[in-house]
Length: 160
Image 1 (spheres, rainbow, N blue to C red):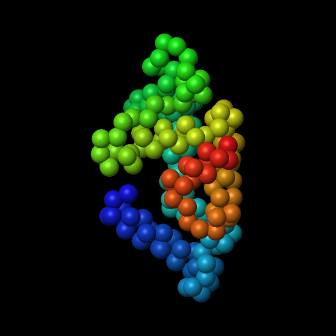
Image 2: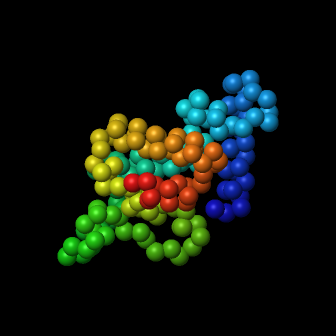
Image 3: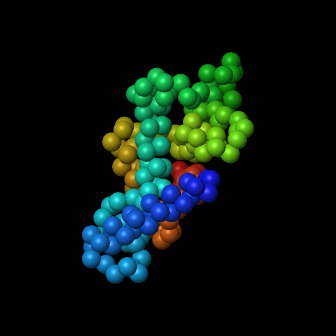
């Protein structure tokens, strides 16, 4: 992330933690992760992760609007033959030409979706949402720290 987006992300996280402490009448130095878990509210970066995965599920099931679906290309649509990448139902990751594009939705969504287990991909929308949220809260509880999207992607890779 660029320095400006890191500052905004940090400020938003600080405000989110402050709001939770106010809701629970907790002192300002109390660790906020237990409050997130108790209130069933995800930190901002995990909300972003959850939103991307849910939208990718809609794209996979062809429920998303076509302009959004057109941002992604399945591997099996490119090759006339079957490859391991295509057989898994993965999306192509677009080449990176700039640092800004590295964090774009079309690239991040493809990377996240390619890490998700094929078993999770075929779940219904409500079950998929519950599964992803359960994964995020378990990760938050296990790590007892704020986990960035890149780290969540790696954790997802090893858990699915």
